[in-house]
Length: 273
Image (cartoon, rainbow, N blue to C red; front, side, top):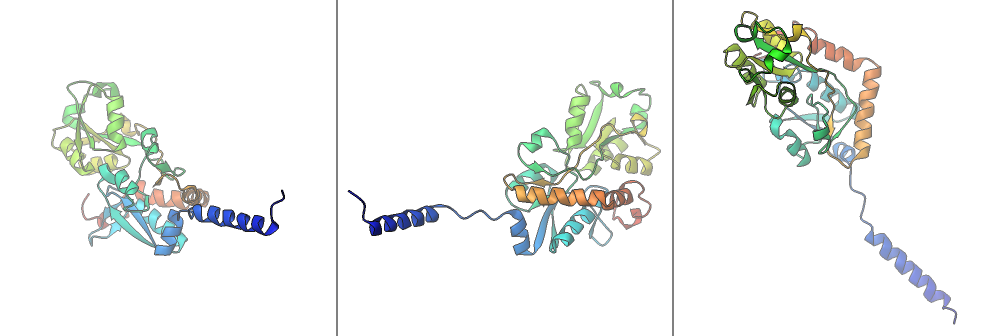
């Protein structure tokens, strides 16, 4: 028996309508959220010369310049959300801000939790050492000893590097790089490890007590990138291509050189080093 034509059409329309209503609307991506809000919210943590306070309390530094330009190129304002480094990834996942632009190094462990853009900087790690305690060391292997104490910032790449490179040494972890460095100045730690060029800047300021280990060379080469929540390929594509464009036109290198090569042009602006 042939189906009645009118009933067949009605059934098809009903199925189509039901199917359409059952399909959820596509989730709004972070780029759309930023544009609708008119503001890019950036998670960061203060550490020289990536981000720091000037004498008027304003944020300045490499990351501040980078994030500000990203927002300008998106046609929106920028809002910085200072966050403790140890909790910055959980805060990103909890949507306290849109993106981390804070000198975060790419690591496999972090990449399990967040997505990284292409690298936009390559700072690496440096080590500042106490002259009295470590001045007689002849190689980095001398730091790999149970009698040696190394300070670092809790939750940051330098602590992981120190644990891998100097497994016999005692690690003393702090919430702030300045605290870790002060341990070296005070003679309570043989050395501290942090992202370049902070150990060099601080050692220059305390040259009577501290020197840069490894003949002043970096201990490693870093790959710093923006960090984003997973599941948003459009946002990852946009920010990675922003980095690509501003690497090619030289803006990132020029800005990085200003903050990292020599602090003489901005040192007097900073509230404290």
